[in-house]
Amino acid sequence: MSDPIHYLPIMLDCRDQDCLIVGGGKVAERKSISLLQAGAILTIISPTVTAKLQQLIDQQQIRWLDREYQTDDIANCAFSDKKLSEIGYRPYFLVHAVTSVPEINNQVATEAKVYRIPVNVAHQREQSTFINPNVIRRGRLTIAVATSGAGPLAGRHIAKEINQHFGNEYEIYIDFLYHVRETIAKQVSEESLRKSLLHQAMSLSILEDIRQGVFEPWSEQQIQHWINQSIEE
Ligand SMILES: C[C@@]1(CC(=O)O)C2=NC(=C\c3[nH]c(c(CCC(=O)O)c3CC(=O)O)Cc3[nH]c(c(CC(=O)O)c3CCC(=O)O)/C=C3\N/C(=C\2)[C@@H](CCC(=O)O)[C@]3(C)CC(=O)O)/[C@H]1CCC(=O)O
Ligand SMILES: NC(=O)c1ccc[n+]([C@@H]2O[C@H](COP(=O)([O-])OP(=O)(O)OC[C@H]3O[C@@H](n4cnc5c(N)ncnc54)[C@H](O)[C@@H]3O)[C@@H](O)[C@H]2O)c1
Image (tube, rainbow, N blue to C red):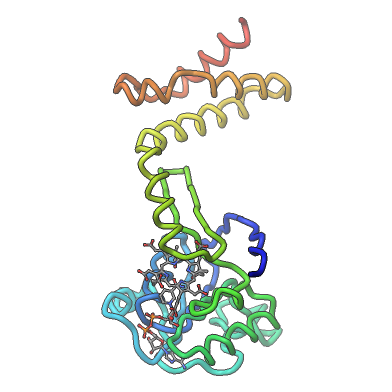
């Protein structure tokens, strides 16, 4: 048995990035929805697509190249950028190889690696340079669960357990901390004081108040007042 791959978890900002999915089946549909939610500009290359994907294509949320994958497709996303089109090629930001034909998925992976494009290969994890975790979201809070390929069922089971522990109160709580931090950053220039205020904000009983149903979101003025009071203490 080989050692598990020590995957590096990172959060990718895919907004306005050209991403490619090769294949248009059930798996392509799931990966498409994740990419669209992340704000990617999505192209699908596949001779067939599911009904849901067809709907998204009709709504012009996805660009569809209605054909089989061709060599070097991954290096030629839409030439929307004039400067780059003059260079002659424009690789995709990220690629999913999710056809039902292993040889095609393998070809896409090999080419992606030549261009150093991150690639996920649906039928065989070992060929992927990134994998997709189970994701739990509460507003700004993202919890990702991966089992280094032990299996989607294992990941799903653990994600379900975590899901039960993190209720919707976390969305309000993390929003609160975000606004407090923004105001501190605007108002307080001294680094050690900023740090101390951030620690104090973390020890407020906000989460408990939200759970008890007695929390009212703080206005900018209330946050400022709390900062001033905490500095004086
Ligand atoms: C979390 C989720 C995210 C997502 O896909 O977006 C995800 N798989 C999901 C579902 C799912 N996957 C599979 C089935 C069919 C049932 C079954 O076979 O068990 C179902 C269920 C379904 O489709 O409903 C089969 C399967 N999956 C992989 C292989 C190939 C291999 O293992 O090498 C095969 C065999 C293919 C074959 O037989 O040919 C590989 C991967 N799947 C991963 C993630 C990565 C590991 C994450 C980790 O480390 O935990 C990794 C390595 C790469 C990747 O795809 O990123 C999503 C959860 C959605 C949810 O929970 O609702
Ligand atoms: N990683 C995962 O989470 C996961 C989950 C389930 C299945 N799988 C694997 O993912 C793959 C796809 O599964 P699916 O259920 O979406 O299959 P599917 O049969 O529903 O869809 C396959 C798609 O690939 C397209 N295709 C076939 N040849 C092509 C080519 N030459 N160029 C471009 N597109 C082509 C087909 O037209 C079709 O749209 C399979 O290999 C399966 O083993 C992975």
